[in-house]
Structures are given as C-alpha cells and as structure tokens.
Image (cartoon, rainbow, N blue to C red; front, side, top):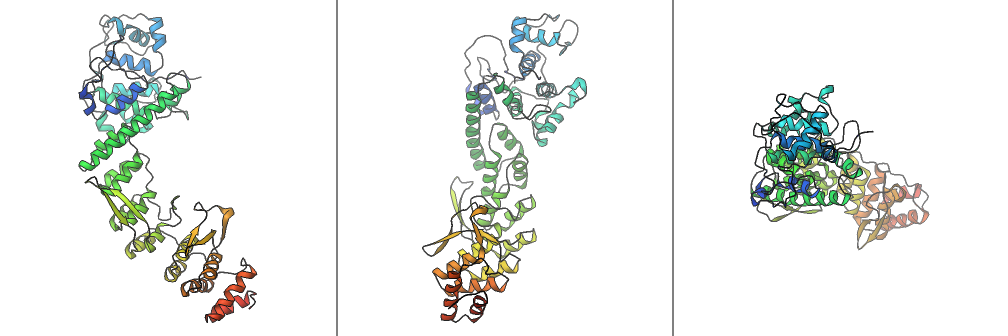
Length: 472
C-alpha cells in the first residue's frame, strides 16, 4: 500500500512563529498559490511573509521533500542522526530522515550544503518523488525533471522555460506545489490532494476553502489583467496556477478578442471551446468563428442551454450576449442571420438536423425550413414535444429527452391547427414535399388540416391528407 504522500510546507526556520504576510507578497504573480497552500496548512512562510521573491536553499529543500513524502511527524519523532556539520538543529530531523533513507548524500561526507540554492530541476525531482516517480528506477532523469513535470501534467509544456530558469524562487515553488495537488499519483486515479484528504493530512474543509479562495481570487485577477492589456502566455499560465478557470479565461478571450495563442493555452488547460462557438456567432464575427473552428470547435455541438444548433443560430439569429470588453464595460451582441457564417459552418462539416427544422417551425419561417430540408435535415426526425403559447412554439423539454419527443411533422400540424397562417400551412406542405409521413398524426389532426387545406385552397396539402385517411 502506498505511503501517505504529503505536499510540502516551506519553512525558513522551524519554530512556532506568527506569520505576517508581507504586503510585497501580494504583488507576486504566485501569491494566491502560496495563500492556498497556507490555507491547507502546507505553506507556513516566515515572520517576513512568504518571501516569494527569494531563492530557496537546500535546507528548505530537505523540509520540502520530507513533507512531500508525508514523513514530517516521523522525522521529528525519530530525529535520525547524520554526519553533516552545517545543518542547524531545527533542520536536523529532516536532513536526518533523508540521509537514513538514502535520499541525500550531501555535497561531501561532512557537508550537506545547507545554504546552497535549490534549482528548478532539483525541486522538480522532489515533486515527482512525492507523486510516486523514482529517478533511481529510471522514471525520469533528475536534471530533466521539469520536462517530466510537463509530461505528467504538473505544468503546461509552454511553462518549461518559466520553471527551468536559473532564477528559481520560492514563488515558483508555491506555483509548482499548488499545481501538483491536482495531479494523480503514479499509476493511480487519485490526485495528490485527494490522497492528502483521504489520509487525514489535510482536512476536507480546508481543501474546499482553499479551492474556493484560489479560484475566486484568481478569476478576479485574471479579469483585471485581461482588461488592462493583451495578456501574454506567461501571465496566463501563471494565473492558471493561481487557480483561475481556463473556461472563464476562454470566455473572456472571446469577448476581448485575444490572440490565438491565448485561446490555445486555455483549451490545452481544459477549457471547452464548443460553447464559445455560440458566442462568436452571436457576435457576428466571421474571423472569430473561423478561429474557433480551426481550433477544434464542433460545428454540430448542441449547447445544453439552447434548443438550436450553431447552424440554426447563424441562419436565424435570435439570442443576445453581454460580453466584457477591454474597457471593463458589457457590450451587447445580438445574433443575426449571416450567410458567410452559415457557409463557413457548412464548410467545416455542419449538418442540418431535425432540431433545426423544429427551430424553423418555431420561428414560423418556411424559407428557413426549406433551407434545412435542402441541406438534408430528416423530415421524419424526432424533436421535443412543444406547447403553443402566445403565438410561439415553446419547447417543453430543452434537454430533448427521448421519452418526450414527437415527429417534427406533428409540431408543424399543431402550429397550423392553432394558427392557420400561410406560413404555418406552407411549413406542413414543405415537410410532406420532402418526405414527411403522416403515420403518427391522429385522426383529429388529419381532419383539422384537411379542413384548413380545403378552406384556404391548398390543393397539394389537401391531396396528401386525403391520402393519409383524413375525413372532411
């Protein structure tokens, strides 16, 4: 059974002090990661604050690794001996644990190198060991640990240059540690933080509080940065490590029309690009729609909050979005019909569906209905059952549950029965002309449309309903 793995708490001096977070810390791009770890009880800082702009040393590295391995209490209780003369009393239990367990041999037989700075590669090695990877068994090469961090998901590949820096600081330590909490242990489906909580090293309440604190503060900071200037990749990756939501970043990037690189990073971090296709169409922005499609947006994606497809939105418009701008204001966009966006969606593989027919019926638009039929939408397909309310066809079940569907022709018949306008009758006629059958229609429905067809002089419609068994 795997031993308890505990993420580190970086201490300068091992003593019971009251930590005061220096004001300077808050301007550091990694402050919120440190604050989150502090909330978890894993990053205690010093009486000078978190000192995120200072280089960590090898003594601090000893504390890091022992706590990463979840052995702090054992180390303190056992106080293992070691041969190093340059290790102060407060750090001796940590270095002793490492020495006894062959995790360090010092810089020579009597010197640990206590005040030497720890590098990004060395700290990356500590993190990987905490996640269950062993350089001694060939899982990675310690000097290339930053590359391995990217491979296992602790950092994004674009961040390697940030953390492989020779100017490796405590802020980098906080960022890497915070990110590692969400990464699964080697050959496990459980993250490091999940393991900490499950084994009692971190309370569930603290974990929830830290997550909420980090996400809220980081999202606010993300919004502030993106409003002030064109955010760059390093800033964005940094704010993600502070807990900002990649999905929120993508939403802001769409409204603010950020660079392609920013979109790519947000998507690589897990943002779902598909809902933003609806936003771009609402903005009537052809180039933005093309960018999203080029980045992998699905032209046939069905948004869970809407009963229409991207193709139908581009064909008929109808929704409004309020998007944050660089000026900090909310700009209103209303989707309008766009032939260019329709053609672009079709070029990228958009397919007309029965749901699109339902939307055309709901807008009482025979021309739009015929467009979708010509594009191959199934005239006998199933759509959500509808109710007629104030002249509009309203879907009763936006999630389109299979048990509450009906053939699209029945929606057209219901609308024409309620409001026998030329548009409504034309819609029924079009569906039949493109192959819709009347097998699902009730006798009363058949009789009602036959009556209307005769009264309003629709001979083709009349013939079709007589053939289906309608009685006048």
